[in-house]
Image (cartoon, helix red, strand yellow):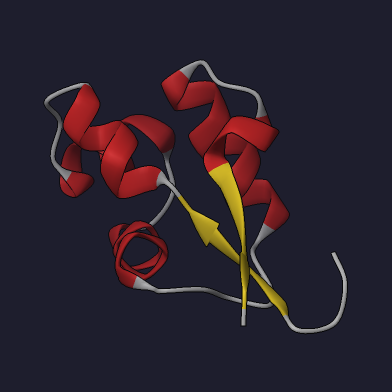
Length: 73
C-alpha cells in the first residue's frame, strides 16, 4: 500500500450477501460488534486489527485479500 491509500473492509457487503446482520457476524466471528460495525461503516482506514481480520475471513470462508479493498485517499 502506498502513501495516500486507505483500506476498506467489505464486511457489510459480505454480511448482506449471506443475509446476516453485523451483530450475527460479530457473534459468529468472535470479533466485538463495535469493531465489526466500525469496519462496516468506515469509508477507509490506515490500520486494521490483523487478528480481527483473520477471524472475519474465516467466518466468511474468504481469503483475507477478498475482504479488503484498497482505495485512494
